[in-house]
Image (cartoon, rainbow, N blue to C red; front, side):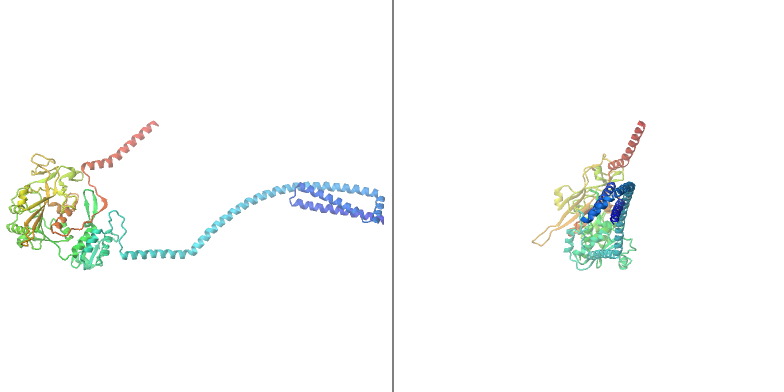
Length: 633
């Protein structure tokens, strides 16, 4: 029994040892498979050995004293066998350790390879992750764009409706503002697009009881003059301006003989009275500054006053003694005067035997023969009624006897006209036709006076000098007061010999200056308060030139009438306005900023040199420089 117990105990110890060794190997292999390193393997081995020794000690420990004695006996008996078993166990253990070490080394090598593989896998995985992250970001951004697109598509209808609503509101506001015809915000320096204060005041003071219609024919909707005319409604509600289509307004087309919409003009109408303006009537030219001057509101206001005034001053032109008439050679003047606040007509004095009673001003244009006795006496009677005369007299080329004409002029202290014409030597006082100066077309000095205050520059063709009595005593006897209006420069000369074509003063020429225009006031009745007699005066405005108010072209290159140049028209119309004693005309002149420049012969040569000479010179210099550089290379 004791031997069997010893054998069982030894067997149990070896089984326990083997079991523990196997468990430790399993744990070591498990740790190794998990990526353990060499130190970890050694540590596992040491732990296994410790556990084995602890187990051995535990198994050899006596449980009790009888058992211990029995075990001691058994141990003493079986010492040689136990020793042998121990040796065998140690040998087998050594072999197992060697095997384990070899296995562990191979496992460690394998682990190293696996670690390097895992590292490369991790690197690949990291790069893959980076790529995945990039792809995710790109997907996110594309998703964001897709979301925006989807939202835009979803909200597109709403947005379209909103835009259309805004456009509709804008159009509605525009239509309402246009219907109100509010005055525009005028930021121009000269206030070109608004009525001047003077014009507004004149229209306010005008007694307008009937409707005034201003029709614009053949103009565009955005014509600034149309907008200007519409502003009169804000001053007086009876005034209305509009653009019309004559195909729709057959009544106006028939009344004013308009054929189609290509006809351009402005019709100012009140009842049976009307005035017709052209685009040219709304502007004028300042030859001093070269600027185009807008007189649109002035002319529109004057036309409104003309058609709404019950009694207009009457102006008559004398027919039968001149080559010119309102219908022949003075159609421009006739049109311009019809647009003023006057009524214009002509008469044959031999038929009437007198100047019409309602004549406020008589206009005589360059008589080419002497007056008849009837005409002379009728005109003298007219003078002593305290009526006024406007006389345009051109230069004469030959001596003619005109005693009746001379007698009428003598009433004002004017002596007969001399044969000859005034010419200029001062280049600043003559006009240039292209490249050549024309000494026959002069620019006289304008003196400050009421009839000439708006005529800042004039062009006159071969004027004659006025021979006004210089003796002040004689003028006093005639009860005449003389005022110079126009004067030729000191560089001018009067030539009687028309065969002489030299453009300088020669022997026989009379040197200037000369009076070309004058106002002569004659007292025909002294005032007597006791007798209740008012003072009567007759005024004569006399100009020594008549062609400047005609339709005759100044230059061969243009068909424009002489009256349309500079302020020729203004001088004629303002002189009549002054003589009919009409209330002072409206003066509203605004510079448009448009400058037209006419060069003198010298200035033209300089301009041509700059335009053509300078570029040619630059090209030549460029070629020379190029050649020099080429040779240096």
